[in-house]
Image (cartoon, rainbow, N blue to C red; front, side, top):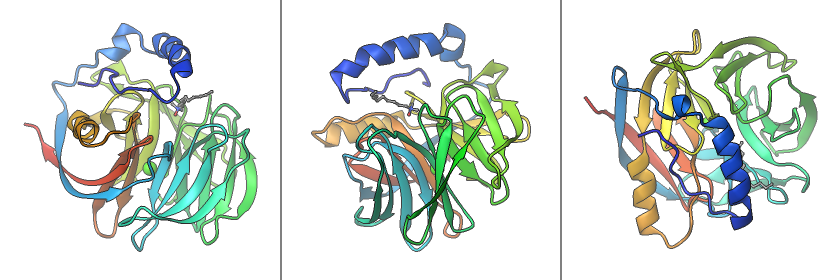
Length: 273
Ligand code: DDQ
Ligand code: CA
């Protein structure tokens, strides 16, 4: 179920580029993950909320008080925004320079950390007003996902490596290779730290890997193909990949959305077996 299957469809032009990219990254070994001996989770939709269908969601984090912070990508459309959960309304917006492609986002000590695609750099913003507090460089292969346990920052770069970063310097403190039944899981994208695990969207799949950050082993898979299928049948717009996990630790609410998805869902997991 975790083979790549979500439609790209942002720009037909980009399809060619992406297939080359995907072919390069998806060797048969990585594409045919065996998940039989692990915990599999399906889901139930608890709530659905509006989501800006132009937001190419690359980072999502819950900020308390029914607000989310979101990083969006695409050149010329990248932003960091504060979004009201129930209405999807953008309450604060930091539009980025057209040469930046926004990626993962996390919130630590009243500051938002955002990485960018293909630059080895990122920005820090004040949570209060999204003002830019500075720029950092990092040593990951690229900037895809970010998350935090409140102490360290976790990072992904589209490979199978899960990084631990020092939030003061963004230097790499540690690395683990993410494996599922011994198979490397590549294309790790948007991240979220939930109850001791790092959850990762696997790019172009409808699946979330629940990773043990101590050794990189995948403890379970969340299978969301029906969620994107339901969305596709209910809206006239094109939607891109599942991307964006946010966890409200206070009320134990789990939110997911995707790139250009007109909806954001609150879901609850259901064990498949
Ligand atoms: N990433 O989110 C998987 C890290 C990157 C997605 C890039 C999607 C391509 C959009 C078009 C790029 C135009 C140069
Ligand atoms: Ca997240």
